[in-house]
Image (cartoon, rainbow, N blue to C red; front, side, top):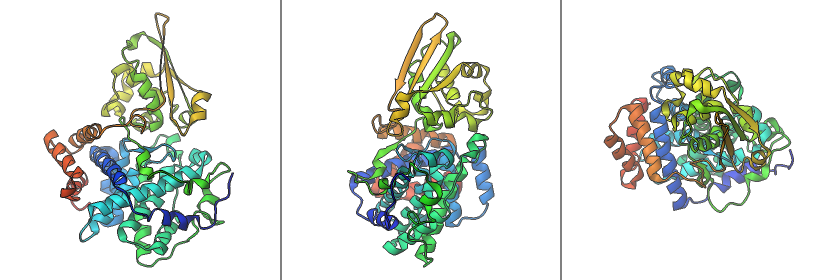
Length: 442
């Protein structure tokens, strides 16, 4: 590692997130909760969701619920993204927190929001610390997620510092998640979110009941950093000063594909007035991670299309939007999309590579048959803190996903989302969405 990880880092992180949560951070937690409910509900009838629910069967225990809710929240690739840590916190932390809240005799809305904030803080700080070498092999959401889920659950369970450390230790002991699924274009990815959420729930509940865990799981000689991190790890990120809570740094996703494709989508949409048949070539320029994960000129499945910058740009140019159907089998096989996709190539550009991961940028260059060249770039794609989605934007996204997934009317979905935002309703509207998406008791 480029810097030593201090002894006591695990305990210091647990102590750091035990501080009071302010109103601004709670407001951010409401935004990610609304967004996540939409993502989860929208995935209800996907093949992945049907498999997950069928496999879970009649098991309605906390761990099973966390797994189902986490997997569904991540299925459509529409859940939030924290840039610096390259993690999807919501699909891991929020299901875990809601599982514990639903099992409480009198679940507190504020306590649940506080738990979400604390879970985000732990997950994203560890994600920021692991380094780029880690991310090339390991999926940060899967490896760092169990810590965040455990921290959220520890908060709701009222664990003291010692048992909170045990919860982190036990969660980290079973952390893992490899990118090989992406190489082979399989449907494994939701498993990572569901398993991370479930692992955190299990770790915290065991700690609450007295099961000890390693108190040096991050910094120990056979701990997390020693096992998973390379020379570019940055353990100082675990304790760096911050003006607020990390949850405020969340990027929301307007399109259901890997976030690394979003800068190119944003740029391509600015060029969508061009006639697709007149396009003779497209060059997308961006940072190296896009090449490693999303350079897929001929995706053969919806899962791979979500990780294909060529597919995303082709859809954006041809349709002027990237709607929820952009990644279904019909669109992947569409001859018009396939022909345009074949004319898209990706190049690593040092300008964007140097700025990553602090900034996720891309440029799209389109050549047309009349010999003209058209360019557009996006340095802060839509949904980043620098280009935020408003509450109305998030409600519109969630409403559309709920209508699509569970068949409610727009009015019914709007009423429920308004109730989720209203403290007077507690968590009852949250359970209503979850029951509609997963079935009562799941």
